[in-house]
Image 1: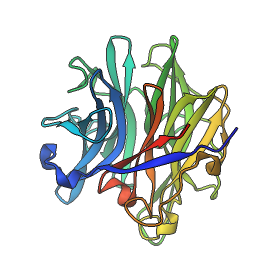
Image 2: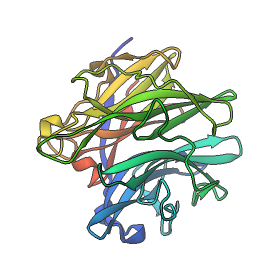
Image 3: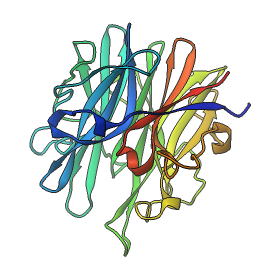
Length: 318
């Protein structure tokens, strides 16, 4: 096992430079790809202000295969937010895209506000019939939500289909922490689920990634790719409390590897992604997404301020 080496290609999309859907003017969070015949479509979550609070919407931008030219930006709603009282009423962030034979499927993380704590999240499913331009829900409810062993939020699904089986890595909440410096803070970990149809999932609620900070480490946005005979996972992690005001407690990129999709060895140093000395990803790196274009493996990710100023790209060096 050798250390991965990446060439950073810099910030490739800044939402402030382009007109967004639903009067969204900032944030391009959690970039996720759909490789089409003549372009790479990158979906992301952007934000609309609603009575002083944010609503997260899904948008996309199309790049040519060199990632140097923008071909198109979504000019209409990609996925509708939920109805009054549903799990995704107050936003969708993120969406994970899966090409499944002749279908294009999206796994969404829906947000709904609460009173004692800030939010509850669940995982939904949407399907596109127009090559990923828009997605429609198959139902108003989620396919995965809080249950007996996961009583708090569930979200951030990343799905691979291998032969006939579906494999999902996602996060689930372990607890909410009361503290004196901010509202209750959520603690969440990465877990694994399996399905034979992509809708009904079997999960065992086990944390599969070792903590390196402390037991309250927050782990988010797992993404998995197969390369050189092994499965690679990137994710982001941070402290549970103080991460908004203390740069040293903010998101960093974590890395783990596996040969069987189930047992993972964490080694962040081997992942090869470090904060820059200055610039857009010098304080934070978060919300990673691995994808392959032809034989080249790429990594999309957000930088400072949780992706307020867009996302960047790195490519794996041979």
